[in-house]
Image (tube, rainbow, N blue to C red; front, side, top):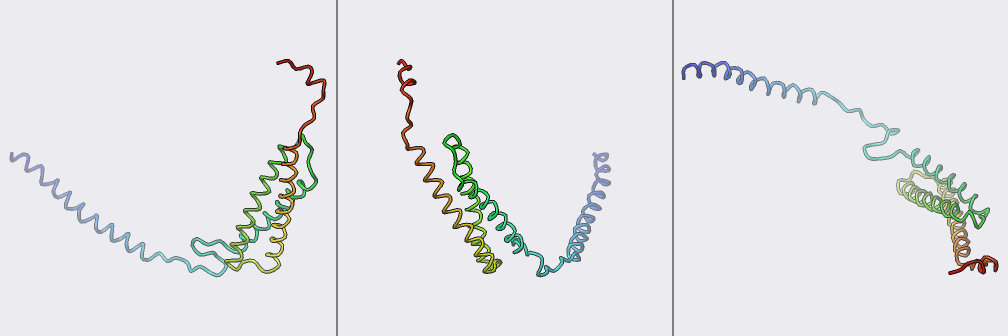
Length: 159
């Protein structure tokens, strides 16, 4: 038993030394954290969780340009066999319209957009709505029109 206790002595000494060293290391970390200073956010840098006005304006301008491209392609009309492509283009137009609408609302709420920018984006939204409605109407009319089948094809079928 005495041999066992003699082996515990150095282990206790080591545990005591580590026990004292751990709080000292923790204290050094706390002191280091206290000495680190965060830079003051300037007016040009966004604060935590915010987006700079230039980013809102850039994204809104991008959305308005994409809307104009899609609206231009849809306003030219589409062939009956290109109906699927027109639907995809209309879906993209709707997606970018929603994105621009959200950016305009955000820009006006944060007072990032001036009157000229807001007017430009509102015109793009109006164009998208007008062209989108016309394209939807054309797509629905093409779908509801009865397709005239030639008499030869009908006669050749046997059920």
